Length: 475
Length: 87
Image (cartoon, rainbow over all chains, first blue to last red; front, top):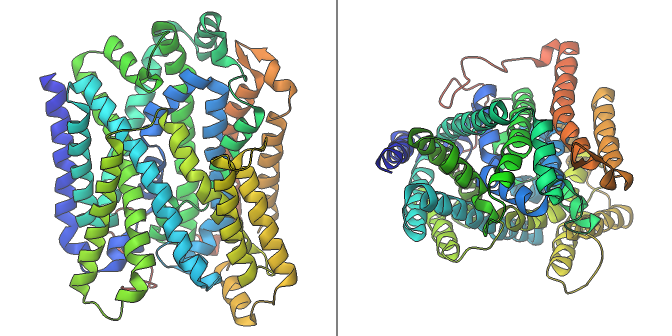
């Protein structure tokens, strides 16, 4: 395992090196730290968006989910994300980029200036993204344990310290550079593995026929109620346009056109990668490993048995890359929710630039350490776990964001009601306080839309200045 | 919103709704429910259609093309935006 460990060591050292190298440039400026000076070009941003979305869940989790709940359920979940990109590209990329601030909370609290929005939205982001980070850390831990022989908790701690270091000191610039490297690495590994397996076994159709002959449940829609499939799809389709770590990428683009094109290109690469994983690697793994205790280990088992040590080392680095490229973006989004959205208004006029920088770094370390402690006892099926976390953001942020940009009658009452009712309805159904045969996100979105409609129709009209300002974002 | 963009969104949502028709859950092709194949097709179609819509829209509006893929295609490249806000 020495070769694999050396390769991973080089990779981790490179990530820290990038963070330290850019830290001088970004440390004193919020614009540089949060959105990389808004000058990221299209190709780089595309790969960074893809890497930010394609997490440990998209390599380890996607295959684990397909193994445990069947390929159709997995495609419903990840297909939702792919449909979410056109929604983001067409509905939010241009106006949000033209808005020109840092976070989704900036937009929502401008559009609906109320304490509920200003404080509830960042709190929801911190909770949902901490859950998301825990899922990513589990992927890193089980990968290092299975392929490098490093104990789970040690691997977890090491990976966490590395990504907190380069995020907290290098901000969005470091994240962008590391994400590009990480994105390229994971695309090569997943597509390369799928290609090799396809050459050995046959076309995806043949692979699928063989696998479902052994395990018919792999291709069936029978693992959960239909509302579950629909819920998976809708959560991600509505999350992509509003999910903070993707929205921050829109703000980093150098112009609105570049933001839109970046989203389109990243979606293309992401789709190909997910389909290769689900339609080629999972069926082969299902044939070779019929009784896995932890489904999330499928990819690692395939790599272990099908490839030599050098390739395995690169595969471990790719999984860590997938984990870290998402976790770093989540951590920055969480950190911005605390340091910029929650504390920014209080500190901006009172604190020095150095104090603000220390708050940014401190908030990144705080979130990272909380997630690390939680990840020592992680949940099962990481894709399912973090999708539930993301659902609350979809339910509470999608309607007010889209209505705030596109509906002239959207007003303060509607916006506040939409954020609060979406979040409350989602939680009530998700935790089972009300037992209803509908996906929690569907109930949350319906409640949010109802509140927005009622507020818009019954509440006072928005000022002409606000309507004019929003209209100018579409130009 | 341009008409072509609206049409793209409507088509994708309609395709997704079509994929969720109950009959596709029990009918199988190559061992997998047709529902799964339809969502897989959607995952290919969606990015291609969105990209085509974007490119077609830009070709109709040459004035909005300013610097999409150029030397600033890197973090730390030249800035083309003046709306920076220091915290």
